[in-house]
Length: 185
Image (cartoon, rainbow, N blue to C red; front, side):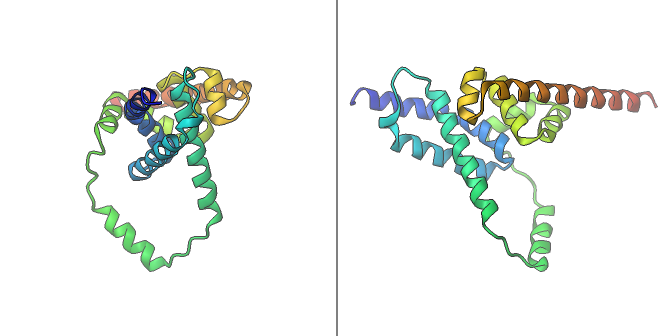
């Protein structure tokens, strides 16, 4: 165990940027994503005895992250939120003037790489499609790994990916037409 412990620790640290990028894609909020990654790492560390050496650590971590996120969403949906309209208006006023600081290097890289149209098209995808596209095209996981992470059949992964890519193509084609039309006027 003494030899495996440092390598597990290093592997967890190495996985943080990819876990965070996926968490941001799921949460759409950098602070929630940070909390989700932290909880994922704590769970992984506490369950490290259950990890089978020689299997895919990345898929194991993404499964923990996705299950944690799903459980958090379920728990939040069950909890009733009570807020008065005055409090909501104050929060909106506070947020309207705030400048958004650079989140972190990964977010900066994603913003630089993803065009506004692509980012919008990805954000507009239904959640199951967005997470499937992310795991396949960004994280380059296999269909089988994605199916295990999302706890769905492999056929569902393939159909979600196909539908998501079709929706992305339509959205980007439409965005291109709209930009082309604006330049001609």
